[in-house]
Amino acid sequence: ALQAAMPRFCALLVKEAFKTWADAVSEVREAIDFLRYYADEAERVCAPIALPGPTGERNTLYPRGRGVWVCISPWNFPLAIFMGQVAAALVTGNTVVAKPAEQTPVIALEAITLLHEAGIPRDALHGVVGLGETVGAALVVHPYVAGVVFTGSTQVAKIIQRSLANKDGPI
Image (tube, rainbow, N blue to C red):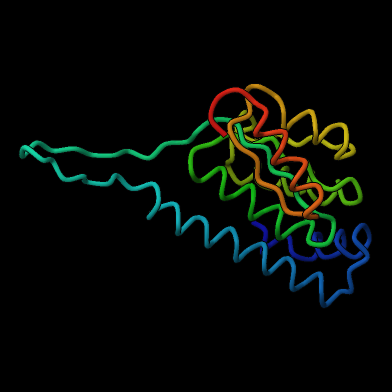
């Protein structure tokens, strides 16, 4: 679906992210590569794992999602990194609240629409827009959030790290 929508997404990348046309084409291709990569990896990392039984019994580990993941993506690769984060969280059985950079929200919201049209359930993927200091910060500390994927500055990563460390329960 993304391959078929390449001209539309390239135009969005040029208009909203100020990419050159060549850079926009490269970014859409990278986003497609991320989608393919995580689809392939899901078959490997989500497969049941046979564990040794010390007394001869069979033990099998069934990997499963952890819950709601917040995906916070950057302005400089607003489609490729966004799609990679979201795809990785979804294929491992999690639901996603995606918060794109405030500079490039339209690209992310169009990507979410494309993913919904491709079959991702609306209940499994939501997008929110707003400033990182307010919307992003509120998402990170929300008690129902099981994990955070972030690409951005080291300074913000450390703020997120401290916020997660101060939450109750597993990080």
